[in-house]
Image (cartoon, rainbow, N blue to C red):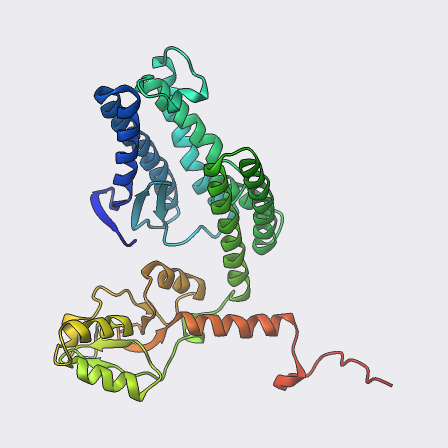
Length: 375
């Protein structure tokens, strides 16, 4: 994720922190300082760090549960709005998804149970917002809030995935996702209206986040249904141009202008993929360093590749994770055989959806039961 940096590696998982997280620390530090002085400000910053330690443990709950089913988690990123565990894929079986989804909130349950004997004094929810109210009561209540909030039956919350997995035990995946997404959007709409009418802007922002998260999940499920059984080779570009590692930006410009291709794989002497030169990087480099610059100094390195036999939806997940305009497609020997791009993904899905909705005479596919001619 952009604007994030690696903080540590735990159990083979990179822990990353987004730079905006420090804005959150500064906000609470200044707020508590203005309310109760320096000691309260220090306690406020410590409190936020402890809260995000609980969030990190929550995300490790998901990651370790997913590892049980052979699913890797490359990294966990801490953001001001929470944490994101980037799983390579979601479990295929509803029962497995249920375990992975529930594992995060269960971590917060354990933390709350451990803190409860140590808690003293007022446990009213407003204690969380009170500077100098004590770390343990605030941390205990925060974990309770995290449990309740995450179990809201709406995507992208854990509760939405729990609901989807329970529905998917009786319905097909797409239908279960649509039902869970609709419920989530209705809850988001209701919560957003309540926040708007009662002056709670944060609730409105959360509602918007949930609404579009549910919409995105429904779209992903539809894509998965349409692309079931497809492999990368069904959607990859097979006619493309590559640039050698010793090429210059001038040669890249010529290739850009003479073809409809915008992004170029960079290959070594043996034809192995060394990197990817994107059009945006090319234009920026031309302005800064000139046309004689070697492409090796501008190209994106450590670009992941996908096998041409990989399942289509898994390759799409790789493409989305990288944020690149294309990823190389290789065969079993590592030889470059194609490019996998968002444009081709979109075109294939449109064609598949059109075919699933019903064959059309316009594309030469006869109908099983042709409509009667008008009289």
